[in-house]
Image 1 (tube, rainbow, N blue to C red):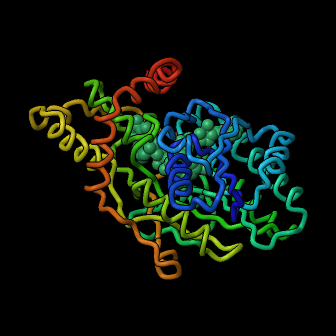
Image 2: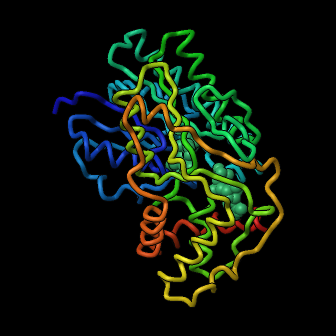
Image 3: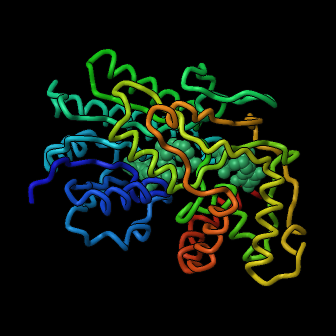
Length: 351
Ligand code: NAD
Ligand code: TYD
């Protein structure tokens, strides 16, 4: 088979990466999709069983911290494009172990940039290095305003500082070596295959198990939530039609205060589990705040909508209902990912 493109997707065994891999494998049989992942605690090939036997899909168990292995993968699979999602992604873990974030998110990204630069060797025509980033690089907002593509970077957590640094390196490789880069910064995602350390899947799991729901601080922190499949379609659009060397913010204009979101989740879970109204909400427990906790994130997604015509396909209520249904239908997945080392993390974080 002659493939039009040979696309390296990093972090494809993780939450968002698995949705991007699935979308690209199914939608573009003319592309070969090479999923590179180190399979950390967050990487799980079970997330991809439905597409793992497709002829245009291949997995490579490779770590971003191994530059020789990266160079070999680019050469072996004649990579023409990169969509880079692999990262350490959880703020609370970055507070516990910041160096892991420096290694994977900064050094790992620079290793990948360098491997692409060397392998492509100035032949950039038709190629693309697409870096997936977060709105958290912009810092925190007060009660009003939005992050735009020109908002200055002001990260506060080790996670967001490491992502900001990786974004800077991507732009540096474009400015210095002409690498054909593109960056998008997305708001908080939710949906199927989300590792239950982040707010929504953690609370779904705890509601199922009737465990306390640990709300940090006063619960009035605000996040802008996007269904993961909508992020994947945005990545598809930016990959194919985004302007080279440009930046796109991705979000759904969907802000929720944590406590309001948690109450909605409790209500939906009571209905779906056939529990009396109000039962899950009794599990809400206010706990010590996260240090350096960003008060509010909100993305202005005007540019991607105006320039590329992208918009989210589901409302939050629909996306959340689909997400809950998926977790209830996949309790064995949930049980497997929350056994073993997860228990140790849970004890350390919520002791
Ligand atoms: P995730 O933690 O679910 O998955 C990360 C994946 O990267 C895992 O499969 C893991 O095994 C892999 N990985 C980690 N270190 C690696 C290494 N050294 N080498 C190779 N692979 C490695 O993360 P996610 O939530 O799917 O996020 C994906 C990307 O999207 C990240 O870059 C993140 O910063 C960004 N992002 C996430 C969100 C969100 O809400 N989750 C929002 C905006 C942007
Ligand atoms: P999270 O899912 O960790 O995403 P991020 O920190 O990247 O936005 O957290 C979302 C919000 O929920 C954030 O304000 C922190 C809060 N939160 C809790 O209140 N309790 C928890 O146990 C977790 C994991 C998060």
